[in-house]
Image 1 (cartoon, helix red, strand yellow):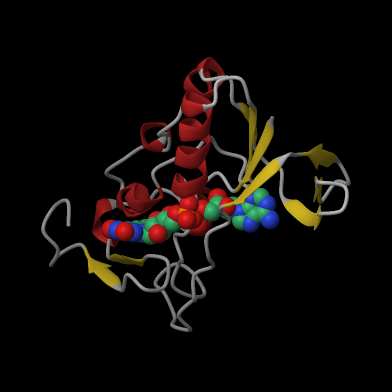
Image 2 (cartoon, rainbow, N blue to C red):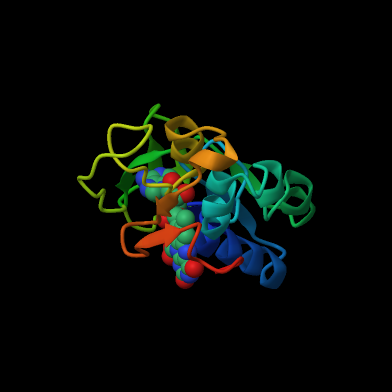
Length: 164
Ligand SMILES: Cc1cc2nc3c(=O)[nH]c(=O)nc-3n(C[C@H](O)[C@H](O)[C@H](O)COP(=O)(O)OP(=O)(O)OC[C@H]3O[C@@H](n4cnc5c(N)ncnc54)[C@H](O)[C@@H]3O)c2cc1C
């Protein structure tokens, strides 16, 4: 059976892993829009603060996914689902066939319309890419706060306990 999981965030990745473990005879494909390997999105604020490296955030190395027989397809945004043909269509027009489909595409952060110290607006550190592109490594003195996924509010470095 061909199992296609769209979205390689925590939910999609764990789903793909469980499917591969429980249905070893199936062909599990994990297709994600992001170019990175599955990573700890919650820890992006640590990356922003300089307390973690990008490599240290990876939760599922390629060897682990391959070892489970999962075909990992990064940088593969799905543009449409052709239910009649049981195929997901990528933005490049490639068609990925499936027998069972899992949608684990998460949600989008609401960006706060506030000015920031280094950016035109406060960074929404929702993805590895935006976190690195928007702020990049910053000096300790410049560490202030990050907003996470819209609903997690402000994390003020000076006031928050470590690990909070
Ligand atoms: C900095 C930060 C701190 C957080 N802290 C906490 C916390 O302390 N506790 C907590 O519970 N939660 C926290 N969250 C929220 C938590 O990260 C999310 O709830 C969680 O990531 C949701 O997982 P998900 O897999 O459902 O969705 P997501 O993590 O959003 O993953 C969805 C994935 O699907 C991909 N995708 C979307 N559309 C497509 C498409 N068309 N084709 C292919 N791929 C697609 C996206 O690129 C993304 O990689 C935090 C988030 C951030 C950013």
